[in-house]
Figure (cartoon, rainbow, N blue to C red):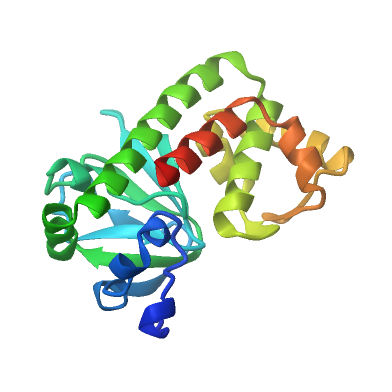
Length: 240
């Protein structure tokens, strides 16, 4: 566990939502955020548990999953530096409605629920920004529902890898076939075929769970329209 300290006037958290706040509102973030390292597969919130904090990913990627009565889990959201978990905190909920875990290891800025609630109540700018981000998250969830029905596994795989590269802010990250299969809701063999196709065209290299984006434009062009649609939704939420 570590804390990042920067001069107050130049403070940036590394999370795009928080860094969209006016400079004056960002000064106090240095006291409100504790930066922690999450390992892959580490659970960050359990369904039904009290929300003690809100996570703002910096270069980690978190996954939100729904658990069915038979124990199966299905991903219903992926969050990187463009958002935060749990979004229910912005809707006055004090309990986690879903389980979330770290999908791609990295750093996360944690804000206590008490400070988050206080900021929501006392800063109109902060509250509006958080709610616009929730709206973008809802749009993405709806978009991915259509994506899972209409787009091929290869297009969806390219979209997911493109979004992950954006979220971690780099071209290399660790991601197993098994986890990617869960994220896409397909069999492992389907993921292997899609990844191999993207590798043959020179968009990525994929070996032993390590993904390297070799050609970002080619990977983005191979993704379905949902990549640009969701990217625009989150970017617009920061600018309004």
